[in-house]
Length: 232
Image (cartoon, rainbow, N blue to C red; front, side, top):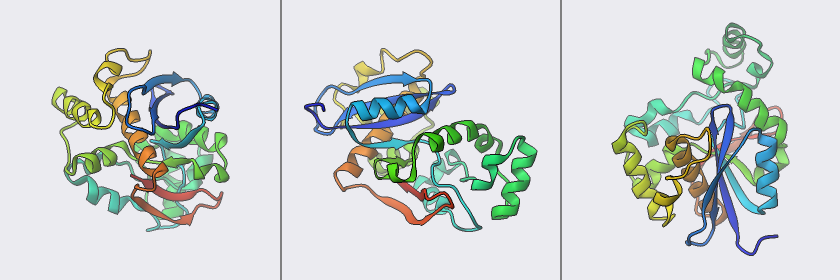
């Protein structure tokens, strides 16, 4: 048990995971750490006694057409809507090729999946193999770009640009006073945009822990019992 209350945000980073640990109270002490597997992420957040953990990865998957919450998220994103990849169906979890995934998704929800979503599949499997449906009272899906839009109250420049990176650092500094220092010493295999996304996810985790978060969806569950929702 730690003396402080903590939350965490998780972002995929070069086939591994970068985790932003953040105190619930507004104070210095936030930090980043990289892990190779989601099992390690789960163990580390348990050891830190994190109240909530925001994960930038689909957790609850689709089972039927028009079940998703993507349209509401895209509306919130505005001109940054292209940063959201459509949620795949549970059917694609058994796919061995992209072509097979396309067909399975079409059969399940009436449309294919993007190559970007297909490339996320190994990490989606990792998350679902590591956390059970009952763990989703602590672990939840978030979308960092949507978190940034909510924090700023408007869309930002692309995170791949120096301007976009600076905008996000300045925003995060309002909730993480030492963010500029933290991102000057990134873990191995962690880019600046991975780090900033992880902290945006941690900000949403803090809001969720304090009952201040926006919950999009959450009324439907997939066939494995995971809630279909995004928390901001």
